[in-house]
Amino acid sequence: MKTVEICIVGGGLVGLTAAIAFSQQGRSVTLLEATNLQPDDPAELDARSIALSYSTVQILQALGLWQDLQAQTAAITNIHVSTAGHFGVTRLNADDLALAAMGYVIEYHILMRYLLGRVRQDSRIDMVSPAELQSLEQTEDHVTLAYQQYDKKKVLQASLLLVADGAQSSIRQKLGIQAETVDYQQTAVIANVKIQQAATGCAYERFTADGPLALLPLPNQRYALVWTNTPERAEHLMQLSEDDFSDQIYTKFGYRLGYFSQLGSRNSFELKLTRANRLVANRAVLIGNAANTLHPVAGQGFNLALRDVGLLFDRVAGLDLQSEMLPPALLQYEAERSQDQRQTVNMGNGLVELFSNKLPLLNHLRAAALAALDLCPVVKNEVSWQGMGYGSGCSSLMRGRKRE
Image (cartoon, rainbow, N blue to C red; front, side, top):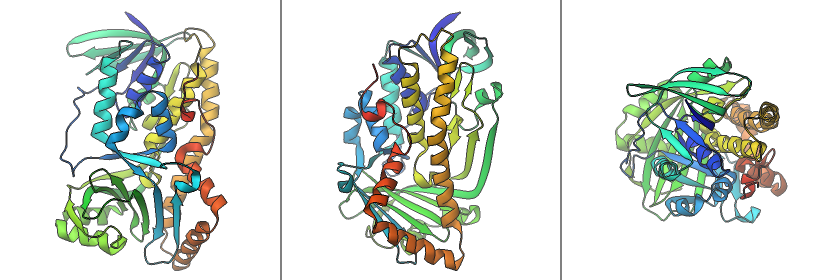
């Protein structure tokens, strides 16, 4: 039986980043991933994108990852928030916060390939892929996992288990942790577009009668579109020709970016909120989508997950993971993370509820609120810092350094 300090189940972006972080703490880490990870290399206009908040960039910086990644990102230097058909606009600017950028956007496959490469080069991390988990048992001082790799059955014992296997987490169920699921009755349509004019670093959030429409800057004069609609309208948008689909965007968004010179393939996915009713079960901790799966309106999913990793990194620093001190430290972590997670979920839900209501009076009130916010620098800066991940608590990694 193999024995390690930390086992991570789930080899997505969150699991890979967590493995790198705890390896740098000097821990022995085994990462189990159900699929045979082979990052794809999509066409330039078909790639999925990830928004990285300022706090996430600080975490990547502290882990020595950002220097290699930054050249493959597009900076968000300002954010333009508006409501279709109404006068209210709020503009958030990095200059007002004395920052070079409020965040960055990177293509998913680039980030995935880079993190996977770093994990495979790390002698402290044993990545097992594919690995099908068959059973899990906990005692007071360890977690035992049985899994199958190809035709071989293996057993692993770990002092700490990090669960990062996604919104439909099977491990969460095995741990007996319940989760609340809210169906937003909305579907996101995503696509990349190429523009003719030079990119300015502006990210747009446009609230329409059908749902929020976001356009995020990408390298090479491209923007990533995320458009929330009712399921019926999303299906209609998916069936349109490229020209007709572009016309629908112009109708709701206008011509702030000029005309699109190219349009990538479209994809869609249903939007649901999943929240675990607790994060810790003895020596097991839920992180990422296994703990919280969010609406994309605020672009906080991956960023919230890395804040999980950052605080957990601090709470176990210098701790003998085999000792009886680990479970109390994990409960402290759970208590400290609850406020940020609650605030982030509520912020997303509040935006969805506020801007999905079509009552005429509310339309005018929303527009007036955006206009008023634009005239209040102090409040606007507070909103900006919260959106960048600093609304509640701050780990050492979020300050750009590792806790010794």
